[in-house]
Image (spheres, rainbow, N blue to C red):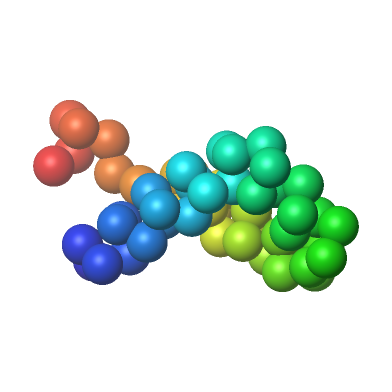
Length: 52
């Protein structure tokens, strides 16, 4: 589980970088969509601090 959290955080930071996001959108549009979907899904499913 920790590996997924770390990977989600790393992907989120990469996608938050405008230059990296623009490159992914331009050259790897399908991959960019899926990476954003993974980050969004992981964010929705993450337990809140109260649940831990």
